[in-house]
Length: 106
Image (tube, rainbow, N blue to C red; front, side, top):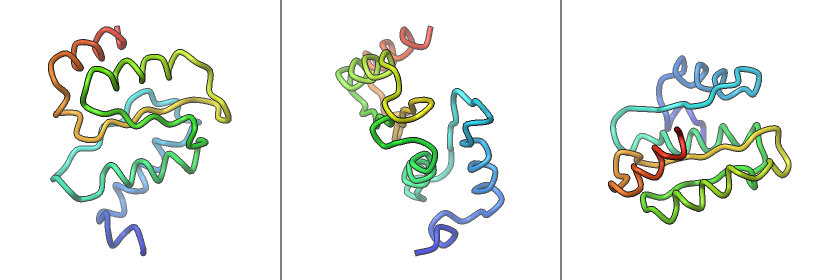
């Protein structure tokens, strides 16, 4: 299955691929758009091209997931030059999770 049939805009896909390149040293990338167009799976598939899956954490919306993410980020990357965290539907984080994430980012 071709990703352009799933994800649409070719220019946006190319820009995203460039931003994910480790040479760019981006700290945060946010994909916004309508629900259910494949932003999460597209980003995950692109990240896996640059890092080992063991260095990728897929965070959930609850406080326990944020705590696990924090511990995950405290360790060195296993097989890659950096680690990545993906939030699917970050706007659904509950209040305690948002507070914990903010403290980690500070």
